[in-house]
Amino acid sequence: MKKNNEVPYKIYLEESELPKQWYNIRADMKNKPAPLLNPATLKPMTQEELSVVFCEELVKQEIDDQTAFFDIPEEIIAFYKMYRPAPLVRAYFLEEKLKTPAKIYYKFEGNNTSGSHKLNSAIAQAYYAKKQGLKGVTTETGAGQWGTALSMACSYFDLDCQVYMVKVSYEQKPFRREVMRTYGAQVTPSPSEFTEVGRKILAEHPGTGGSLGCAISEAVEVALGKDGYRYVLGSVLNQVLLHQSVIGLEAKAAMDKYGISPDVIIGCAGGGSNLGGLMAPFIREKLKGEKDYQFIAIEPSSCPSITRGVYAYDFCDTGKVCPLSKMYTLGSGFMPSPNHAGGLRYHGMNSVLSQLFEDKLIEARSVGQTEVFEAAELFARVEGTLPAPESAHAIKGAIDEALKCKETGEEKTILFGLTGTGYFDMKAYEKFHNGEMSDYVPTDEELQASFDGIIGYNNPKL
Ligand SMILES: Cc1ncc(COP(=O)(O)O)c(C=O)c1O
Image 1 (cartoon, rainbow, N blue to C red):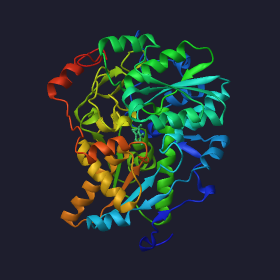
Image 2: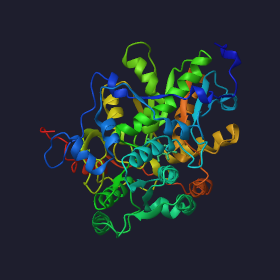
Image 3: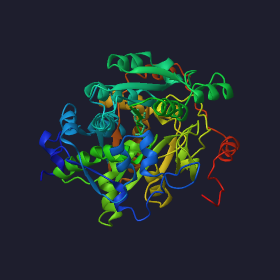
């Protein structure tokens, strides 16, 4: 083991050190997350019911809360080698700029063409779809990272890929759309006139910029109506957290090499997949009572599902075509105000993270748009990498923690997830530079009106 003071700027693992298994947090949770429910019967969704919508192997992963480790298939490991292991970076320049005694590390997941961590699960989901003999998959995308990742993964396995992209992002990010088309995907702005659910949402909310919840409903409807197609999802589901555990497993392996142990682990939270993945091996130790860590989810104050939402059964999508999930939610009908971190515009949260938060094993904070972009810009200037706005939420969280250390003199070790790069987010950066950024925070009344529409809210049967 090397000594702490020899920590290089970047720690790269060898290819041979790539994790061979994904870790399933649920296996070690005393209070398991509640199962997905069939909205018609209010009974847990069976494997058969889920398999109509999702790929069979992914359904098995989705409902398995006992198996701690899943072997990563050789074909997926081979693909991972194109861009993994991802570096763990010691943010020496950021530490210096902040004049903090804290030691800051970030796990950088933006080193692939899709520009984010989403590829880790996209390749797994495309692999299982191909193995099942499917023709193609449908999906939603918010900021566009997931759609890009899935289009790359589908082209690798020669699968058709149909992406419903949240309309605001579709309009703000034409280049991201073209990257997806370069990889062969068909991209449709959501809500669209092509689906029943899209037409309904447009009638109820004319001129809406869309949301992840709407796009999910449309993609599910299309998959259900097409032979040889299934729906795949880039976050929120437990299978996605499972695949993303590769982030944390690598981060921990890199830290262990240098005898480093984080005190605080921070991630931005949209549907919860990158944070769930980053914290996976660390929360395992916490759940087993072997070690303690502080985990912090950072979300936008415009879409504050954990910090201001309710813990209740709710639809995963706006169109109410998906199963019910028990989660922290703002209500599946919640329409976030225009928010430049499109990937964080989701009304709910993964059920594992929701249960961990309910059990006070993780914390959550919300941050405003302008302060997030201030953090993003500071980070870009000192560390060089231009962060995605979603990732910048985690940067903001890490900076806040590091500044607290400056006040107290504590030499805490902070680990955060730098989930992606922001080259396609320059419209948002432009608004920030022009002082036109919206910092809208929903009122209690607005949230209450949305909670009242949640099926499981104050419902003793659920
Ligand atoms: C770069 C980036 N980071 C983070 C997220 C948030 O998703 P999750 O909470 O599932 O990691 C997204 C979602 O689109 C994203 O694009």
